Image (cartoon, rainbow, N blue to C red; front, side):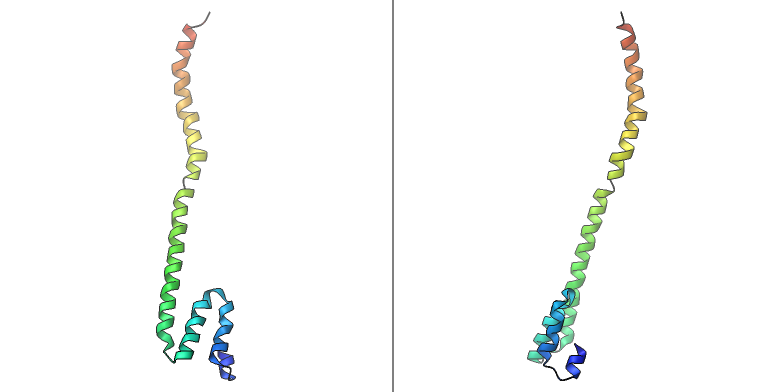
Length: 105
């Protein structure tokens, strides 16, 4: 983009090369708008950076919330069955064996 401007291309055409790149689309739009109006680019870039930061922060929060859910998976798959096999089954067998031995033939 900078090389195109140095070579004498129209600013709108030079900024348009960035519109194909996903994260630079807002920068390209701001550059085209500032090139057409003569406004300073710094304010537009500052607003675009704040918007990108907010999007990244929202994505990070969403990932953190998913980690909380996925961290319960080992509990359900490993610890809970182990608790049932080691803690509950012996107690049930211990309580049921005298009852079943009395009910014999």
